[in-house]
Image (cartoon, rainbow, N blue to C red; front, side, top):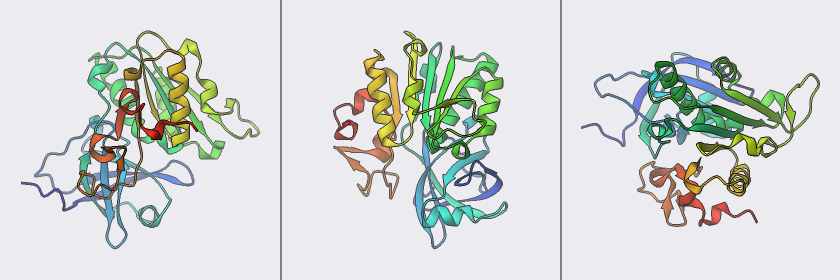
Length: 277
């Protein structure tokens, strides 16, 4: 039986520079004796010796296995150490953990993705797997729309993926907070891009980004008539174990690592984390 408390060794096969603060590390597990699988929206516990362990969302699709993408923003001791690693170096991973986006339920739906900054990472795998199914004509969705906000043009991440999605028919609308020379797209908050015409009776919205962005996007979608069960989001908390044992990610009676990180708004609307004031 596989020991869930002991990290598996994974080697870095490729490193993609998404922007000045975010890198995507493409990993491959060294031990092939235990099959590995995951669902979009789940996370791994990533570790580096002497630097600790942290929860990181998987940003690739299960269709890309045996390669696993972790998109990591440099923010603390562990992530700084990871950013210093090179192709061929090893890290430890445990998981996958947590709930996931119910891709099987998206057949025939219009999908509206709303993301801010690194928040596009856990949504990226959903877009990729839906496009893969669309190509195979297996449970295809109808229309995919992405609204993505960044602080500046330089902060935009996943540019290569966004361009590839556009080539595959995804309506990608980008916005930045600060206007810059030669920027041709929208300037302002990502909520400015939310228009009633984007919603249909078949729309499911998937949201991830800074907490304040999530709250305002959900409030706006709800006001526009989208049902509570058709709004899906992820929550971030400092997770220590990933398995609901330590209670560190406790939130209003829920443990984000096991009850989430993916929630419907119906499951969240009565929690204080959704309050706008």
